[in-house]
Image (tube, rainbow, N blue to C red):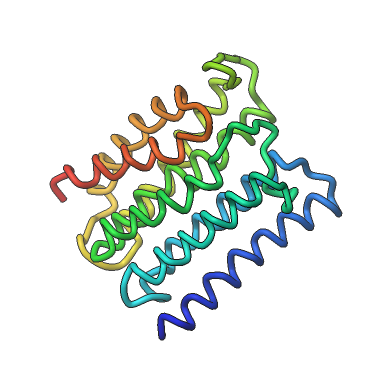
Length: 221
């Protein structure tokens, strides 16, 4: 596949996810707290297909830079209601594509590690507030943020499942067995769950990903 076609498909997919989230907000009455996470997870799952869309990381980095600008403009002016956060200091939608671009540059030749590095952010951070809102009873406060132990547990479980699957299922070097993927996935999620629990202002999109990158770089696969 040519990189030009990859860029077109990448943009089409992301705008389709945003459109779906906006449809859920308008037609089904879901709040932006939920629709933001639909976008969060949907866009993050695109990492599974990057090696099929592009021949190098740079077209994807270009797409990430474009969406950093789009998301920053939206954060400032609020064009896309499905992406809005009630916390105006939260720049998570801007940090997300930055984190994805860095991961792609570091792990492009190692697709299992590329995808695994983004799964704590994609599924862990994506489901934590949803689980917390639905089942959260044990509340704790970090600065101006309100978290729940149930939400943190949701972060750990969802992130662990998809990090483990990425290390095992994603084709390409290194070749990792299902058993060999368990310990690195566990280590990543133990560390990133603690980091996510204390991160504020949307910085978990950077700190969680940075921790996952470091562990995957150091792990003796």
